Image 1 (tube, rainbow, N blue to C red):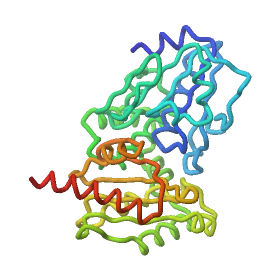
Image 2 (image 1 turned 135 degrees about the horizontal axis):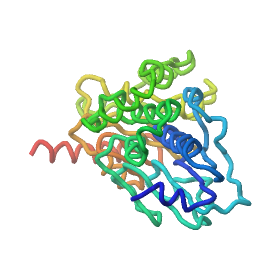
Image 3 (image 1 turned 45 degrees about the horizontal axis):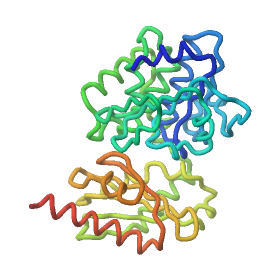
Length: 319
C-alpha cells in the first residue's frame, strides 16, 4: 500500500487509535501526525486519542490530540492505527463511518480488516514498526522518531518479548540515529512509576493467587481499589508483566472491574499458551503472548472459564 499517495490525494485527514490507548497506539498516532505535519502542506490533519497517559506527555504534540469527536467534520481520509476492529475505535467510530476513504494499519493477527484499505503485518512487533516502513527515513525528525521508538519499546516489553525480531532491532536502531535518547524514552514511559502506582503494584502482587500447580497467576483490581488510590487504567501498566515473570508461571492474568459483573481481562503468556485464541473465544484478541478481552460474571467465574481454556492448551502442548 502506498500510504503517502492516499495522504497526498486528501485535503482533510483524521488519525485515531483504539480505546484506552497504550504506548504503541499513542506512539503510532502521534508519530504519523508529526510526520504528516512535517512533510505535507495545506492539509487539515487531526489526531484523536481517548486519553494520553501522563508518562507519554514528553512526546511532541500530545496536547494536540482531541479526546472528543469533531462531529461537524467529515474527513477525506481516516487512518486507524493499532486497532483490531471498528468498534475499538470508540468515540471516533462515527468519524470513520462518515469518511470518504478509510485505511487500517495494524499488527494484530486478530484484526478484522474493517477498512477499505487494510495493511496488517502480523509478524511485526508493533504498529510503530509497520509505520516506519511507510516513512522516508530522511524525513523522520527526532520528535517523530521518539514517538515511534516509544511504541516499539512498549509492545516489545523493552525488546524482551518474542515479537522482537532482527527487523525490529534494525528499525529501532535507525530511530536512535535520529537522536532519540533510549534511556529517557524507556525510563520516563516504561519504568518510572508514581508512589501511588507502586502501591497498587505492591497490592496486586501481595494479593495475587497461583492456580494449576503454579502455572497460572492472577490478580484482581476492583473499582473500590481504583477509587481508593485515585487511579486510572493507565496506572496499572506494567503489573501484568511483573506477574508474568513469576517463577514457574505460564500465564498471567490481570482482572480489572469496570462495572457490576463486568471485567477487563489482560493476559500474558510465556510461550506454551496462545492467549489470543483464549481471548478470541470471549470477543477479544491480540497476540499469542499478549491479549485481552471483556468478560461478565464474578471474578471467580471469569478465572474458572479462563483457567479451563489454559489447562486444555497446556495438556495439548504436553502431548
